[in-house]
Each structure stands twice: as structure tokens, then as C-alpha cells.
Length: 271
Image (cartoon, rainbow, N blue to C red):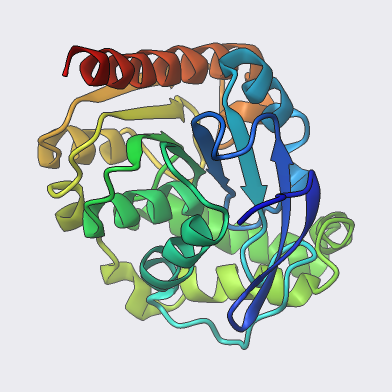
């Protein structure tokens, strides 16, 4: 896609997706593609994309998946396969549409799971590494407990009002995520098999106090992956490292990105 503006709406088949592009465009430098959490969107990354672009010199592409932010809504209920569908159908079209040439997928929560599914399903040599913040590879009891508490806060607290500031179709955004995770059939969701097919380095950043997942998620990656898996387990941090520990998260992610991109450049130069 030529002439990618700083922000706008991207037509992608039946979907219209909100996006921001910070720094150099995909044809001029590596691109970090940010995939948001289950209730996230472009705006909810705050200034993390801008700081990431400044720290790495890479372009940073941020977008809201269908059903979130200002992107087009989706039909409810979402299928249990919604993260696989995103990784295998929407994300490949998006990368092609923006002219992605080389870079790293940076995902948070649901977005981290989508990035892992993509890398385990596609041998895409443009993707040089994965940054997975608070990823889910299986469904844990702690996940269900916290997601049930989120439903209570949405129905009877102020969560709906807070999310409505970011999501014009707030019920679609919330229920599209919450209803799937609390569906009994979703308890069997497990993407550990995909991890064995990932062929690029991975960085996992997780808070020690993550209310949506335990260190079992990290252990699964270490057990199943044949690729290198770096881990940053952050004390005193819950489910959102980029928001709760922005400095250490930015430094950890930037150092990983610099290292793997430099390694590729050196290998290409040597060849």
C-alpha cells in the first residue's frame, strides 16, 4: 500500500479498520505491527507505539481489529475460533495491504495469541520475531475467574462507561470477547500445538501478578517451542506491562527488537 497516512481507515475486504502509522513506512524500515488485547484498540495503546518507534527507529503500525475502536463491528456471537480466524484470514490480508516487508509482531493478550497462531500457521520470512505480552496459550481457571469479574463490572459497575470512550460499538467489543471466553466449550481452547511450528525468536513479557494468566503460560512456550524464548517476568505488574511498567517494558522490547533485526542484517550482509 503506497502513501500510508499517519492515521485513517483501511478497507480490507468486508472490514474497515482504524489504524495509526508512526515513523518510517514499511518500504523504508522494518515495521512493528501491534496487536491489541481483547478489549483494546488503537487509542488504548496510549503513547507506547510512539515511544517504541523512537526507541527502535522502526515504523510502528497499530490497528483496531474488527469489532473494536472505530473499526467496523462484527456479528455476535463471535465463533470460538475467532483468534484463529483473525490469525489465518484477517492478519495475512492486513500485512499484504500495508506492504509489510520485514519486522516483528508485537501482541498483547488476545493479540499475543493471534501473533503466535499466525507465526505457527504461516512460514512468513518477513516476520523476524514475536513479542508476546501476557499471552494466552491455554485457558486457565484464573482467566475465567477474572473474565467473569469483568462481566460483573461491565453489567453493574463503571466498566461499560469507561470502555465506551474507546469503542463506539461498546457492547460488540465487550461481548465479542467476554461471551466467548465464558462459553464452556472454550475451556478446551489450546494453541500449544501451534507453538511447535514457530521458527523465529520469541520474547514473552508477563507480570508476576497477571490476573488473567499464570507462569504456566510461559512454561508451555518453553516446553513446546523449538525457537529461542526469552522471558521478562515483571514484579508488581498485572496484565498490562506496557501501561503498568512502561519504562522497563519499552526497554526490554526495544532491546529484543534491535538484537533480532541486527542479527538478520548481519546474516544478510555476510551472505
